[in-house]
Image 1 (cartoon, one colour):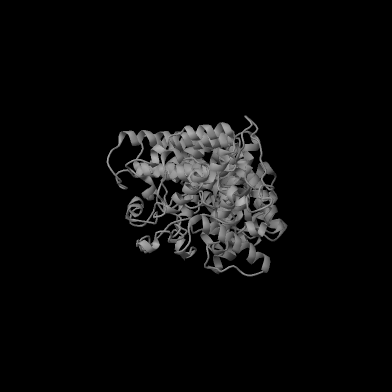
Image 2: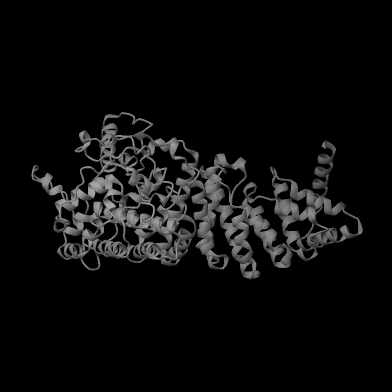
Length: 627
């Protein structure tokens, strides 16, 4: 082995000592390539040896490599895939990250020339460029240092420029690029810097001049697919805790108070509690966080360039195919939420109507419809950018569907047979828990709500108040009573609404009826993108707040009503504007809910007046089968 390296080095020097003009060197390379077919490979082997010298220290070595690459570019018509396989292997195995700009430029020129010379080499040229999306592992240590950032810009600028040049010269090349990119996409176990850099390149290509030719929609879908792959790898058991004594609304408020106190007093928050801190050190969560931020930033750039509506359609298709039925998804769906927040008038409305259309259509599977209505409820409740008028119109559509269902169906309570109905009823109550006050504060919308057949759907033989999640039923009851929403239908008996066999059957054995996909996000970096557009429970003014305000002097002083730009309706930004410190927001309250041991309750008379609380292991649902 040592003798071979010595001979190869001698060949380098022998070739280097000969002075050729550019045209003479091209002729020399052509001759070397031609002689291979006759059995003379000495000059050819010298040439290949130059390309395999990956560590260049001396300027003359760099100059020799640059000259050789340029000479091969002038002789590409002589390159034969079979005869010169070792030469092509050496070329396609080169990483631009290992060289300076002179070598990079010569190498890019050669790759473009090879792609243009033979259709058989196009895929190999594209694969070589895609391989340069990421650096060798040895480069990771300096990737974020100034010289690493500079190298990244040098390499990737040339890679994408070369891809565009090849697309111009070989019109069919873009159609081959997409499968190459998807096939070589890093798996979930790849180190975060490499995975993030690869996705960054995919998104850059999506927004480039050839993005549409490559298949920009498919690139976006491939990114979302990888987000889902990472999402489902995160296990809730490792990060969530069990507290069998708290209801979902109470829990979110208590956690907020605890976090504020701990931040103020410098006390470390218990690691076993449900906080964003509990995800610290979770490698998969960190990868997902980084990739989602890259996607957020790309969507922001699309909004700036006027492409968001177009890109959103691809996102929506991906959501329907991948995310909507990925019942273990915890965070990836916030890509949709953020895109909608960038363009509420178009994307925001489009998403809600899409979810409603899926829910009311009998052409979709039952679980898909239930998932859609859970998404719709969570979205309408949490989207701070949605107008109260639009929320009311979507609510009316749900209420109308439920009312029509009640007229068609007969019989008593049956959680399994009427799961889709109970899913819709729970969605209605959940939305109203968050939005009833803002609707009642606008006379026109208050009148619209009062005309909805709300009482009809909650007072009938199907009795959804006995089946839906007790924590939501109790909060809905309190607000409906304060708003006089249900008075004309008599007094409902809620005091015994603890979890029962009926509610357990509604969600299945694992109590999966708690599917609220836009519960507060637990990813630290993503939080800064979602937070300004998100409604936390602590921001909600309920209809019974007025009763509490009677005991305070200035309960309404901090309410800020913003007016929707088109139509003058109050929007979700009418919630109280909290000036939480950034550190607090890093651990802001959330409302992730899933009871585990739902029957650990005594239903004796002594419990008759116990307020409804949700015995729960705080576990965001893994399936809308819950509904």
